[in-house]
Length: 405
View 1: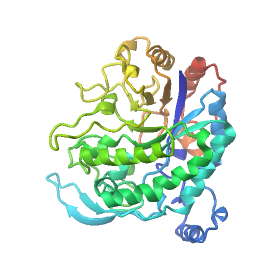
View 2: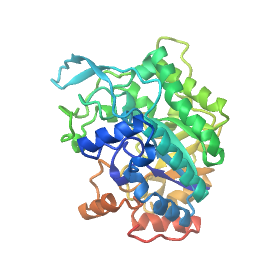
View 3: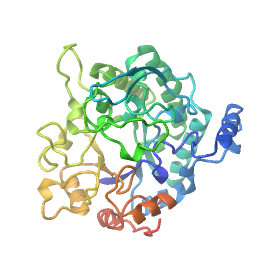
């Protein structure tokens, strides 16, 4: 079994890895945008991701990790900060703020994004590693938290509107696939979206409080675990998934969708229209597992003996966390001996071919020491504790990288 790594956010800055960098002065922002519009891309400083990317990829290789899943964008960085337009204010019984948005994607993405994407693929080529680019995150469609357009959300028209969907896929995904074709051996699979069903559910992360974002420009209210009206109907999301997968497949890349649970791979909607197909999962199905079993509504009860990897086509595990359980729960079949190494050994025994670990450190998580978080965010280390690193190299036979990298 291969162990992979999720490389979600450099410096724990969500969605700012490639493309326009908002962490600059307003003056510099305007200057860089003008340089991008005139094609002077090499005069623009690279985004912070590239400060330590070589070092981090080199250390992953030492650990014998050669497949990396990479969350590309939250929406605005495709197009230089241009975002959705508030269509209307929608009151709610809880006096929390909803905004209804109108969004029409541009015909072409920001030149900085495509330029940085190609640089990223070149880095993976140089390191002889493979990447799973995840095109968009589920926050793309959420309409609930922000009035500002420099963040995720408000773009559900790309799912719901046939014309906007085609313009988005042709103007953005197709252009990235054109670039990918030059680095075919670098692409393990192309992922359409991370955990799409959250856009179709009234419960979940798009309805939860976001305490880390309360001081973010544009935040007026955060939901506190209440139900909301979903932005996208299941059949509309499935149309988007199907069209994107067909586009990826037409380039002869493996296609995947980062489903939140195993059951989403064969999810069969109930209710009208009665002929809804199961959720599209691509040529290489993927699911995530955090041990959160909720009476059949979440993860499977356990990994062991559930035949999860006997599904046809065979899936891979796109996300799981270490036994520190900073994101998930203990694995019930390993109670009393639940270690990261035991998790890896169990996955291998159950027939998993690829499992990609989620970092121990990432935005919104407060279950670690402040000084640890500050060090990770200051120097952009690999976001894995020493304990987790040791478990991985014990499994892979790799070499432990320095603690301060």
